[in-house]
Image (tube, rainbow, N blue to C red; front, top):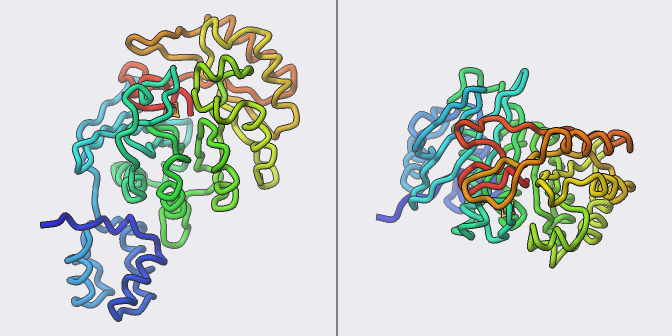
Length: 347
Ligand code: SF4
């Protein structure tokens, strides 16, 4: 028997069209979505405002999938790493990070990644496949259900496994559900951040199709180093990437976050910091500095604290907002750079 498809892979319009084709009024689509996203329904049977016939029909065609929780690891600092097993046996990881008054959840967009950045574990295994929009949404919906206070999960970052813009259609469809305040999960667009290694040809689409926050994984100030660290740079060198950022249709008072992993002796000099300040001069930018977290057999090291602080000071003295992101969850390998198959280090 063919497995049923996950109804969360459908947008409202797709579901309405599917229903209409079967002679069912399209206004049933929002009713169904409210059950799934607002009331966290797991089966059609309990959707009491639908007729028995509609419920039976939906049940014969669709499932409302939950991800299979393989393992949850808790860190001493309160972070939690979730490992989910997908129906095809692949495993994806998410990290739930407690902040002062809310949670941030780091989610994945692909199983593996084709882009092969040198400092990233995900890139090592190559790309297995794209996640469906339903699988992307489920990471949030399922973890939300796990929380005592679901509303305390307010921030989503697409910084887990995969390059989100390489799975554009599914990612954007998922974002629309995550940020739909009437029929979806209701996250603020501002508080959903998509982080990319810089697939320049997709940035105009993203700016047109969403208003989520944008982060760019930059990590170097000259093309030679960035080519070596991130092979995507050979296709879209730094100048091309920054030009696309300057053209990006940012809403008023919003800025692009530039992520910069500090790698000892590679990109952490005072000259690099000054060059970074110069490069971002005409961009609405803020900067996240991420001291590298070594993983097994990684070829890079974390810079000394004095070097990290010097780098930050140079940016601050050039009037940038520059925050050092000290990773959480290191004892459970959930920190930036330590997730098996992930790119939080970078994105
Ligand atoms: S850093 Fe991101 S784009 Fe680069 S290999 Fe890792 S997951 Fe892919």
